[in-house]
Each structure stands twice: as C-alpha cells, then as structure tokens.
Length: 123
Image (cartoon, rainbow, N blue to C red; front, side, top):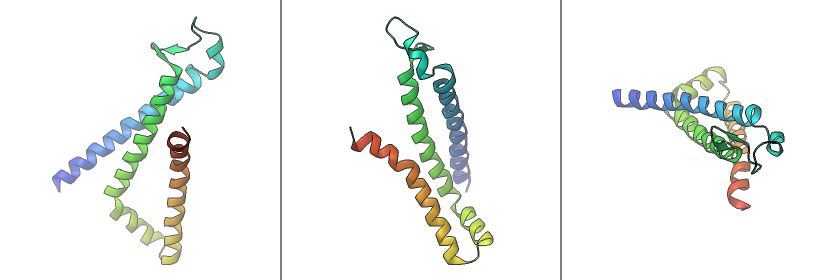
C-alpha cells in the first residue's frame, strides 16, 4: 500500500510539473515569440529566447503535451476505482454510463489521433 501511495504521489508531482512546463512553453511560443516577429529579428531570421529558437520551443511544447497525456492516463488508471465509483453514484443507469464512457474515449481519440496522423503517417 505504501509503495502504491509513493508511486501515485510521484505521478501526481510529475503531472503538476508537466502542466506547469506546458503552460510556460505555450506562453513563450504565443506571447514572447509569436510567429510574426520572426521576420524582424536576428541576422539569420531566427527568433531566439534564452538562446533557443522558436522551433525548439514548439518541439518542446509537443513533447511535453504528449508526456502530459501519458501521465494523465496513468493518473486515471491509478484512480480508476474512484472514477468508476463516481460514475456509478451519479449515473446509476448502466447504458447511459457506458455512453458517457464511450464519449470520453471519443474525446480522447479526437485529441490524440490528429497528432499521430500529422507526425507519423504524413512525413
């Protein structure tokens, strides 16, 4: 039980840090280094922030986003008893509950599949 608690605590801490990192990298991409300033700065045309070009920040944001989804999946797996108890309590009608589960899976796939198609199938 203690090992499960420590693992859960580690996943939650990594999830928190990952959310912060995704937020920071998104802020840098959107507000500090917007695409429109790329043509006005630097002799080589590359916008830099902390000596890192904008494309690096975009790649970092993508990797952090994927790791966030993986950590979120692990978090839900560790709390699946609580999640199922919540749904059983608030949606007692079983077919409707399965419909909600299906809707959540469709939302997850709509979030992940475009990234997979863009990065791995259409190189």
